Amino acid sequence: MNENDPAHEITDRALCQECDVILYRIPMTPDDPATAALLDAVAWTPTGLVACVAQQHDTGEVLMVAWMDRAAIRETLATGRVCYFSRSRNRLWRKGETSGQVQRLVELRLDCDGDALLALVDQAGAACHTGRRSCFYRAARDGVLAVIAEPIADPAELYSRSEAAP
Ligand SMILES: [Zn+2]
Image 1: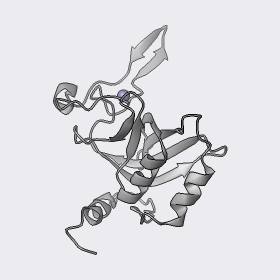
Image 2 (image 1 turned 135 degrees about the vertical axis):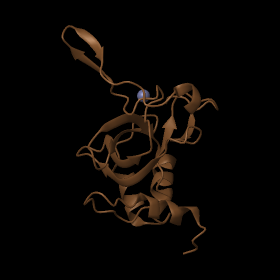
Image 3 (image 1 turned 90 degrees about the horizontal axis):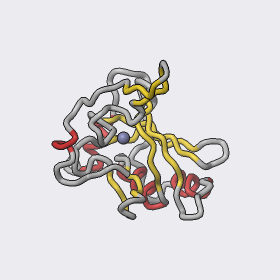
Image 4 (image 1 turned 30 degrees about the vertical axis):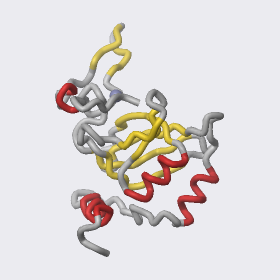
């Protein structure tokens, strides 16, 4: 493979030196039968979407939830970078495309009844558009909805070129 090929570069950077996770063939070739099998097994919403939970592969942090359509799943598996479908913008949303807070895919899993995906990822920086590591920064605690995590990045800087929440 050509070393200047961006997919090759992404594969190498996705290798985790600090944990024992088995890295599968990511990115997959566009004609990998696993992609077709996954697309066939998904229980799509009436509008052709499926929910996807993103989890940091080594720490277990639950980072965010967003939607994928067929094209987003194909692109995610083929590039090794997570791509969602933005309902608000009605188009593919390549996570980190303007913020730089990309998610490299480690593995894409499907649940028992096919209505939810789990993306094991390596998240660079903040997953949330608020600049927090995780979108799940609010919790029902002690009689209030408590903010339990602070931003690790300035959202105004991350999204100055207009990447928004899904
Ligand atoms: Zn968020």
